[in-house]
Image 1: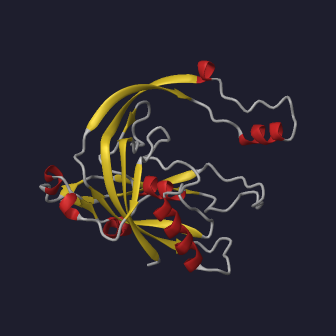
Image 2: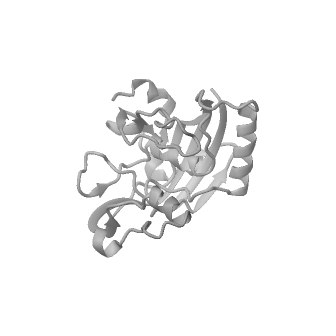
Length: 241
């Protein structure tokens, strides 16, 4: 196991979307490891390391809320942004919401608080001479100072993490009574993460102007929650594509 940390994250809303819901967004009852890995990458990321979620603690009751919101169907093209920065007046790095709007209903989680135990491991990509200790110290400093290079979120950018606290232990006495009374809950098959075909390396082989693959394979696992604790490490061995 690599260098490990424990954090507590909180926010008013979360949405860990079930992939089987094709039209409307419906959240899983608990976070997916892949969503939490993405959250951590918002704090610190390098190609030479990957995050591994070991344990998730659900502190607050699992409470859903239905909302309807406007979404846009397109993304701003990075190539258009770069072209405009280079002086190309014909480049249009904009998304026009009035022309690209799609209204969707969403079933979200509200008032969420999770404990996350995780570690990072080397990927073998773009290895650096400083080694794991350098990454550990940088991540430790950023977690202590509440720093990030983009806003950490709960599944979707619209649902930010409002509080992130580095801690030595995940105090299970803080788990609410409703969750603590759940002896063993089978959460069913859940999305573990998406594994992209590029393996984390640019498909064009250019780290200065990288292009990554959008093709990915979904991986699933079947965890249990016992008194609010999901032992991801225990069920990770049964991941299925």
